[in-house]
Image (cartoon, rainbow, N blue to C red; front, side):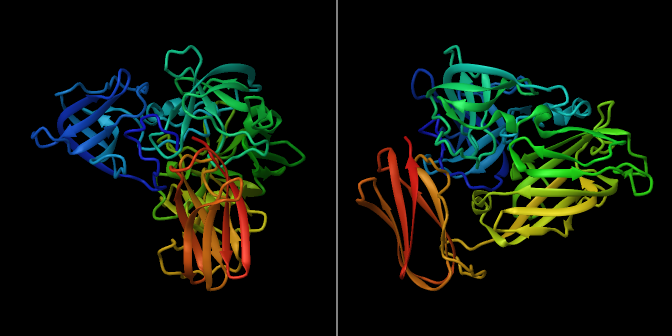
Amino acid sequence: MMNIFAQTHDRNMNFTELDTISVSGTAIVVETDSTHLLYFLDENGDGIAEYHLNFGPNWYTPDSSDAVRPVNGESISIVGGLKDSSRMEESTIIVYEINGLFWRDPFFSKWNNMGHRDHKARIHHGRRSSYGFGWKHDKLENITITGTTLIDSTFYMNHYYLDTNNDSTPDYFLNFGPFWFQPESGAVRPENGEIVEIVGGQIETSMQELVIVVYEINGLLWRDSASIGNHFGGGWLDGNMDSSRTFHSPFDDGDNMKLHSGWNKSNGSGHMGGGSRLPDSLFCQLFEIAPENISNRNGLNVFASYEINMFSSDGINMLMNSNMMMGKKMSLGNNADFSFHYSDMQIEMYDGNESEIVVNAWDDVTESWTTIDATVDTYNNTVSFSSPDVSNLIVLSATKVTNINDNVTNLPTEFTLSQNYPNPFNPSTKIFFTLKNNSNVTLSIYNIVGEKVAVLVNEYKNAGSFTVNYNASQLSSGVYFYELKADANRLVKKMMLIK
């Protein structure tokens, strides 16, 4: 993870929610240089800090409150997420509120960036009741712009911004798509402070900054602009249509829903929740969202999640309930066909067992997840099903596989070595592999000239699935290879360290 405050930010944030903590005390503010301040909290008044306070990048300010960072000696109350940090003696609190004022959401991954559900929208729900995003964006405004990259690395998913006027504050938000996406061109996400040239599509959202959906970075293709299309994969569904219509998520055509003629006819269901008839036309959209943005996972190990919206012509989201909350279901006049695509990286990041994938839809009436009978194709990484019921929230979950130090309970059927994640990385990454049989195992790292620079595993292991964390802080930037040997089997993959 890129690091704005190298002294304070832990690069290895687990893919789990943080425990919320409320504390009060005296602020201790330490100036590290002319631009960076470190914030601490003395809880018991002895002049010694019990907590380090992470307010995010020095340029971050909330857009929905008047909260400000504290001054030295100020009495403050903090609500935030508690985490241990290998870089600080004190435990770190990622600040959510200060003195009763909102500072930032506990977690929000902005890689969708299609009008995000922020703090203000949750308070004033009526703002989200009108007009699906994409409805008023028939075409993105193409833009070529140069600036300095600013990265918010408070949470484990980096948020990328662009400073175009050298005032060290963001002017644009850079939408690189899902965190697991890597283009075949070899283009990589920029480092903090790197000067880049971006070609992309400019849009306005509920965010403070204008959003640029990135098409190119430094002359290398990031994503084909044609894949975004009009309405970002969404569009209008006509009640009188005589053919089928498919809608897809804006960053993966493999995530799609196909609706057929007769979707709103009375010979089927064709009803909203509560028995009301469906309208003659709907604006439909499908987004993939971060699993952490599903607040009611109820113990599910979610590795992929999706939000489906359907808006009537007057701008009302038919999949919002009467309290303007998401999660409602709708019954169509016939079956709709759904297909979702996931990557190996996604399921590995959440330690999912691919042989045990389950599809669930949220039911706002019972306030619970209902299991959907779906077809899972692990070869093509797809999940598909047909149903007349459309739910606003759909998730893919899987039981967790064992860690390298855990007992093995679900045995794999293949000898595999997955691509490390993240890649490129700086300086930590994860390497995943599976053993079909009990074996003598070595996992080694080599530089570009074939010299062995590290041995991560060298022992006998039982069959199972394993994750190895690798910190390459002692190495210089460049291309490296990691080799997995298990008795007579051998696999090699390439990874890139960028500092």
